[in-house]
Length: 419
Image (cartoon, rainbow, N blue to C red):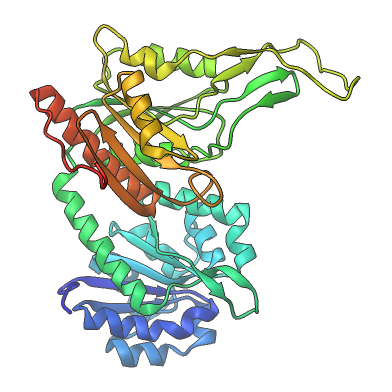
């Protein structure tokens, strides 16, 4: 009780069937100490009457941008400035697409564009709609702008389908809001962790051509590397991002260079490394590359043998520079996580390594992950969370270890379980 005391929360309700749960969200936010105002879309008002929300919130409910009485005093701007946080629950696929596009076609989207308050979304839609590439692209765009998605949950849906897309239940949603508020207000005090530092991040896969129409690559989506770049900028870094072929929006405040092959990524990184204080190698650079044929290889036999040559080891190259930056590697493993990660840490002479297991519903293409962060005399385990939240925790550790290394200290933050 009281975790949201004196917080002013604007609750937006869109036209998803999960809107029937939203009065309970109002009540629970109030129980946590928040003052709640409600804004509904026209579609939401056809599912559940605004009178219900006026009764539970004890405040008038706004639906229409063209409310003459309210807008005489620029009511939508007043509400946008009033809110400490904006929570949209449920947030439909249509609403997410509007917000990602910067559309201001109704009162709620206008408020979201006009406010400087953090925005939280509780997605709710059919599981096929949630998985659709357009919805996932919109989610990625919104998250790159600092919008936080809570859920969706997995389970049975009103249409009879089962899968991801259910709105998170009101009790869990309010708990997540409390945690998000605590993180946001805690981040304000530590937002300068990397202030004044130049950071280089590499992210995504590389593609190694076999011939003009074929290539060899890997399953890296680049999501973790892009999240690390965003978290580093939030911490005040002057950040350069070198990205392999991915379909992700550039985080705000990031300088981005796009490359395709391992050779191009290494060249771009080495060209930028001078003057960098920290290098974070989150890219999945191809270990081997074929000798590319000048023309398309024709199908003339049952088997095709490729000669593969070893690619340049960018992490080891940077760590071996005469004056290397603080160098952080990533290790994706399918087994013996800590053993293999420590081998890579020591073999490449890295300052730190972030290791995680990959495989079915782990790591690649997922929206959340866990990690084991190691350095020479210690480490820290990070439990499963969204990749952006995980990236923020990684940046916290990077900043602490960078400071310790420059001070000559080797005191570990916390040793991982089992060490």
